[in-house]
Structures are given as structure tokens and as C-alpha cells.
Image (cartoon, rainbow, N blue to C red):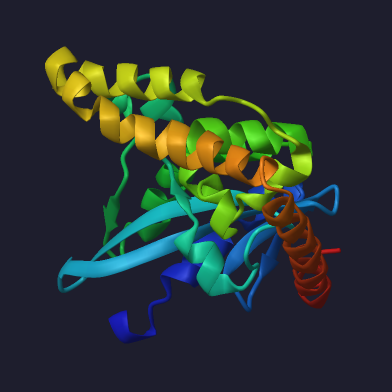
Length: 246
């Protein structure tokens, strides 16, 4: 029975109706629920299966994200790399100790119940945040708060960093730095947070705001960034059309 068991199939059967009511479409090629907002933002949700703990016990997480048409790619491999699990919202807003479960375990016998339980958590967590992103401006803010790694290193055209250049963003990222340090402090204490501060500062302020400003301040880099952003927009829009999402 295990050899014929498909976690993706059960996931689809259990949440398809709910996701369809939210405007998502199941793309079988990717095994993801996907939705496009304003022809600019791709939202997606899928189940990640991990190796079994032992025979008959399956481990999984539910993951998703939002990416703009200025991202490096909308191919499945790229989307999977740039994913968020249902813990990100609580990491920043409530502290790391208040996360929803990151991982679920089930057997063939209770898989439907566990998937529905996991989806209830996701509806209150990361899916709620993803679905609230209804404009490009909100998308930038979503990345700045929940997924700053997606918009770092704009001078190297990393991931979706060019969206900052297109938007003309000038957030110095110190608000995100403060939230992150406070959340970390709740778990590991003030002294530990202070030791980690330089790492957080580099990851959030220097690699996001600093790299973005490097592009703004260099006419050559700025021109190259806008040209690459337009190329990506055309390529990613074509992918959305091929997937029949627009």
C-alpha cells in the first residue's frame, strides 16, 4: 500500500476545495496550488515530503511563498528553493518560541486528519500572510519583514532583489532588524542577541538596503538592473501563460 501512496494526491484531495475558493489553481506539473495577483505576483502553496522516520510514518511540511515577475525564475526548482514554511509569521511577530509546528508526522491511516490539521495551522499563519499581499507595494513589505533573503544582493541581481529597484524602495531595513533581534532575544536572551547583532545587521541592512543603494548610486549598475528586470518580467510572464495562470 505504501508504494502506491501519494502524499501529494491526498494533499490535493483534502484542500483543493478550500484553495479553489481562495482563487488558487492546482498546477499538476508543479504539484502546487498557484495564484497570480495583478499579473505581477505569483503565490503558491505545496506539501514538502521528507524521509520517513520509520516504515509507514511520513514526515511533511506545508510551504509557500510570493514572488514577483522580477524574480530570477518561475521554474519549479527556483520556487522550491525560495519557499517559506509555516513558521515565518510567528518568528517575527510573536517570537521564535511561538511557532506553529514546522513538521507533521502521519501514517497512511491518519494522513487525511493530519493534513487537514496542518492546513488549519497554515490558514492562520503563512497562507494568511501570502494572501494579504494584493499589491506590489505590499509585496515589497512582505519580503522586507518575512523573507529578506529573497531581496538581498541587488547589485548581483540575486533572486527577487530587482523588485526593490523597480519599486524605487528606500527602506533602510532597521525596522526589520529591530523586530528580528527582539524575536531572537526572547529565545536566547539579550547577551546572545547582542553577539548575533553584527550578523543580523549584515544580513538585513547591509545585504538588502546597502546592496540596493549600491545599484541606485551607480548609473551602469542601475541601467543593467532595469534591463535585467524587464527581461525577467517577459520570461516569467511567458511561464505564467504556459501554466495557464494568466
